[in-house]
Amino acid sequence: MTTLFGTPELAIGTMEGVSRVRLFDGPLDLSWRHCATTSDFFADLFALRFQSSRNDYREVHHSIGYLVNELIENAVKFRAQGEIVIEASMDSEHFKLKVLNDVDGDDVSEFQSLLANITVGDPKDLLIQRIEANAANPDMAGSGLGLLTLMSDYGARMAWIFSTADERDRICLETYASIPISQTHN
Image (cartoon, rainbow, N blue to C red; front, side):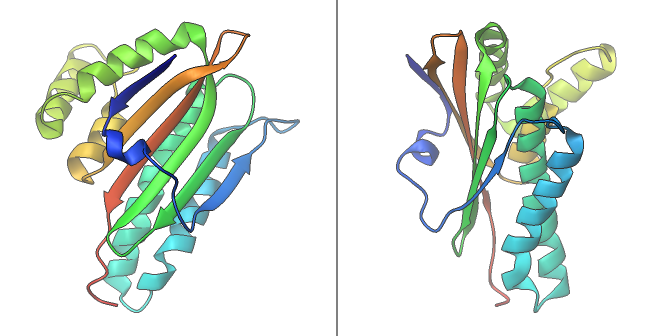
């Protein structure tokens, strides 16, 4: 069984010229510091072509770093034990990211419900609604604020594919994102 949320064309086909990093589960355990270190690596790598303009470099570095960090943090936070695979590529107009990890089957329906709510409607309006809801209920878990911020403030287009991973009640989650990148100054 496969379920898709978000922008379908992001998840079709394979990315060309992809850079791939695998975060392995092991003695050090995957943690938040791995998210920051990995997102800085991707931001440094892909922002290099913008180094001739300090402002462009900083903007691109920040946007890529924020996107990668947010999606890896979600993968670490909600994953079933195992590795996380991050794939990224960039063309003249977009930075594209795929994060692949397994999640426990018990956690899937809640996440799919969240995605069903945040992928319909205007991201800016939904972000304001979520901020107001969080202010009224600070203990609200799984608010989707990070994802809505990516869609609203960074112009991210996103897609999620859930498919059966194996017989142990695990689901394979593929998260896709694309943000606009301008190379007008190169």
